[in-house]
Length: 235
Ligand SMILES: Nc1ncnc2c1ncn2[C@@H]1O[C@@H]2COP(=O)(O)O[C@H]2[C@H]1O
Image (cartoon, rainbow, N blue to C red; front, side):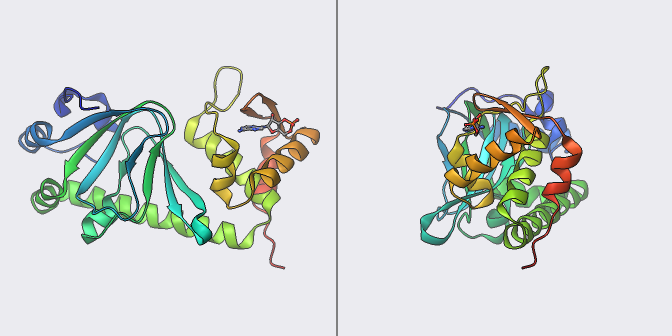
């Protein structure tokens, strides 16, 4: 659903984004020409294979970034936080999106056409620097995910995924992680079956490492969980 565009200059989300230091002239051009839409939970923002015409910025809500793997199985590559940009690598390479973005809750999203981004990169050195830094950080994150998936046991990866969602979504006042992902989403983070994910959660509960309330998870023993997350299985 298209909505009235928020003004970039006064937008609090901008301070969390790579547009933080962009000058007034460029900001007003972006503000005037960007798209701004509302999405319901579970809606696709962009899909693998579509031409990457620009970048998306999460204005409110939360989003999972997924990639289709072997046998069409969905892998969650990462989550986007408010202020984060999505789809910028294929946009820069002028390719199709190699990932999909799907909302995890009601969300609002800004869209900036790639011509505007290329202009900013050419004319604003600070923005270009931030853009490169973000791209390299993402590459580092993806390398870590690949290494983790190929070298760690399911137990270790489940522990790691709990630490990741804790870091990404934060905790409520009672210490529960502030997201309720489906079991399919949880298992798609680590490339295992949902049965095996839930079985491992049960083991962690029995060992007192975590507690749960419905779909909410609370870390009870952070140190032990962190140790399990870092165990490498070279066999
Ligand atoms: N989608 C989910 N997100 C978080 N926890 C879940 C989800 N589905 C099931 N669980 C938890 O996994 C636990 C496995 O052990 P239990 O059956 O005791 O309780 C289960 C739930 O609390």
